[in-house]
Picture 1 (cartoon, rainbow over the protein chains, first blue to last red):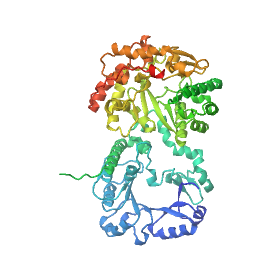
Picture 2: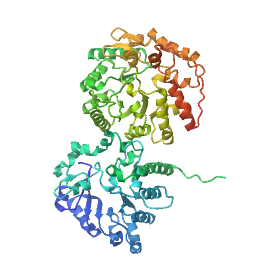
Picture 3: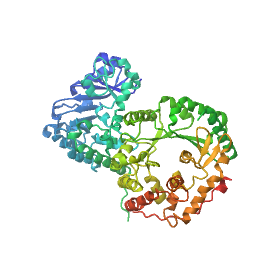
Picture 4: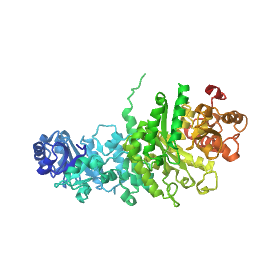
Length: 287
Length: 349
């Protein structure tokens, strides 16, 4: 059985066809968690994680103690009013949840810091990269080099933990868009290699039965090896010092994205500093 | 190389190793492009080696230099059977440097290279890359460096100057000074991030030799190629190395008629050994970098002076790089521990 993790909605017939697999389920609200979990058990699938994509600010979500232990990725546009969120923090901290906020809204640079400082794991969503890269660098430095207790902010933590220097590192998995780990499936069983492809109905296969042989598919291989195209150009991202951790994700928007290169270079240096600090033992002063 | 010559080669290797039970032989498959031979050829090589080197097989290592454009799944099994775990390759992002046809179709070539590379990595082989510095790359040393290291070759990156010996492709030739400046632009970055880019030649070997006290020199700088290398041409004719074969120099006869021991002890080789002593009293007298280059490759010297009794013209590049960049950036001043003059033929006899 393929190790690729399908991302799909909790549609009973589809789940029955995916029996025995580990899945990421997309649901519309936190209130549907129990229903999705029960259906998964009935259909014999394991829940890797639940994605809740809401359009309301975080303050509007109703978190419940009963959802403790259930992995949730919650996408919200912003925090909302902190005074309304504050009473929910105790429960929020108890949940196995990561809050995703987009960086194209300026307020979210502060929002992510607040969540992190309060012990709530979070993730910055770059979208097309049209963001304030200097503020992103401040956030990344805070996330990785801040010496006080705080919750991880992705994708900074992910890369800091996974970067080895001897390979290309892709942080797309943080957003379920790494085709070597996740595939996206619609109710009819059409397979796409990213959430955007699914939305655009760009399918790599129209048949769910192809899931297990997908990694042998030439188009799939082309897609996961898409990094190769940067090395066929006489200029561009492959010539950037930090390509190995960004893999040209913001190439399409390079004109509007002068800062991406500077950001990822700094990111690379901070990762290396983080890894040194992590292995360094504290040596107390000796007389 | 026809299979009958290949068979003789393995017989000669076996004969030599049987006589020298403490020695090993490394067979380097080189071209042209060795993969043009096809996967079946390498399967035949596996079979011939098994047939003729039953007891000496553990002392035979294989490595290969290929441009990877022909590499596919069919090579995986014979390569593994030959014990090849890593390949040497070469690549140039500059358009029209490498590629087939009159127009040097680098788009086609580079696409084939990258496909071969992916297949290679998928099958768990390591690889290293030789990059040849040309005039076209002189204006973007760091871009080229990042490009090559972004490919994250497990075996590292080697930055060599292009060697042009005639008027063909003078448009890409570089001087020793050009090469020094190219390396000099990269070195401070490499030094700062040397844990990020571990295997970059010539930087890492210089650090090993100058700072860490580990002797690590390539064939051209080692001063010890004299009795160690044999180039075997497709027709079985032998020479010192690929370059000497190209120029019709240092020809040692055919493997059909001579044993490897006879070839390794050919008296013409003594000229190279003599060169080591001669240079110490002449071109290289008093040079504090002798231990790091030994006058450079004898063939480079020959290309320039039509005699082995000179240091290589690339001496300036090595010395210039160390004094102008390596020492100031690292803060380490190189002082050699003078090595004894080599006398190595006796050991072979």
